[in-house]
Image 1 (cartoon, rainbow, N blue to C red):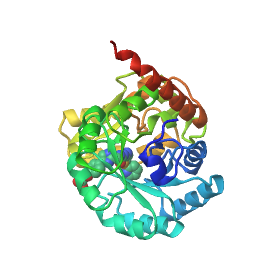
Image 2 (image 1 turned 90 degrees about the vertical axis):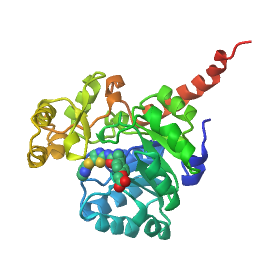
Image 3 (image 1 turned 90 degrees about the horizontal axis):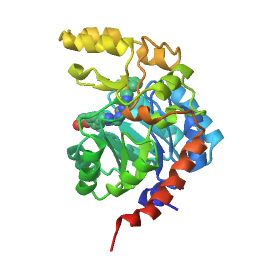
Image 4 (image 1 turned 30 degrees about the vertical axis):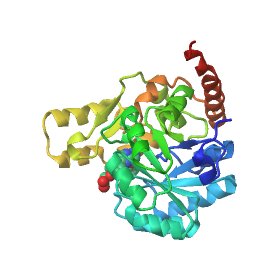
Length: 315
Ligand code: TUI
């Protein structure tokens, strides 16, 4: 049985996190993942504080295991979301797209563990000094808002920079990625895209089908000139974004084009004009599975692979 330091630290069976995804990971997906033994995470990205409270309550009705909430730090109403989380109480908060430092003490006072996503060793060290319980080192293979470094490059460097557990994210969707992450020194993995194509994920079927049909080069990066690069599946909207970039268009035009596109993907399934966030690993995901199948296959195949690896030692 694969167990790491993060399992005891947050009370989970398997060191596998489901990435908190705005417009995609609600209480149903998060509680399903936690019930199987991973860490399910509600993506609070698009939620009002009231909706988030309702989602946390429903998650508690559906699992007695630890689960988390992911918050996007650049949201203007972030303080209200933080207060809502503290009021409801959850086991873990993960943070994205900014510096979590100012919130760590507040969450700790409420007995909530804080695990920031970091795109660099500089932020990793800052977050450790600020009291983070663990870190998620996320490579640019990921979907959604991304940093600059690949998973292969960032994970071992963050592991070398800090003395708290590091979870690897970006480009992982099967047992080989899981074992590779452990080899890089990670104490676990986080997967987002793999969980999009699960029965318990309540996004529009068109989003799941696009992930399943995607091949290796279909998840492209848009919005680099805005300072908020976002990886999405190639469609008409993504091509329009890339055209704007080619023409060095004013930033306001990106904003106008992107308005409402996350909802258009998740709720309406608008294949042409939705913003279908996805990691590069979509190319390897070929079918919709249950959360239980995803997690249990990865764990069992990883155990076989690790046992098998001594075959590389000769003589
Ligand atoms: O955050 C993500 N992925 C996301 S965020 C998002 S955008 C969204 N916004 C509003 C509503 C709905 C969705 C879509 N996908 N991943 C974690 C991540 N964090 N990747 C990169 C970073 C990051 C970048 C810079 C973390 C910290 C950071 O620090 C800057 C600083 O202040 O030093």
